[in-house]
Length: 142
Image (cartoon, rainbow, N blue to C red):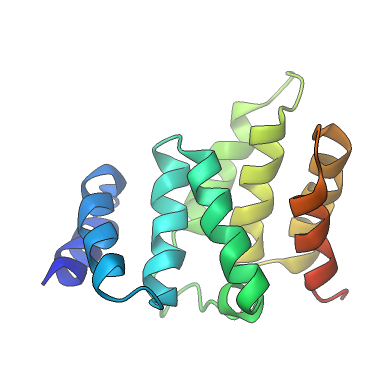
């Protein structure tokens, strides 16, 4: 029931409302990779970038293809909507680590090379880039 409600809010792009239902569904099914993929996007859109990156890292360690093989249309992935919004946020500004990590996560759903590009930039900006480097090393080089 929780996952179904979370999915409805996710489809309606009400990410803040989807989070508690998806978290409840994840508590009931800790191996729910599809739930985690949606939560990453929900956390990004609600400004919880550290939580998003933590789940992102967990999925990459398990199998990067969980995210890479996302079908933008079948999975109703909002990345095509979210990426331009995030890219506009930094026009003319210093690109923060949070900004770079966010775009790296979003792009992995649809473009591995762009994701790698943002991960490289993020690794240079991070005080402790170990997790970012681990993610980069787990991704296919295309």
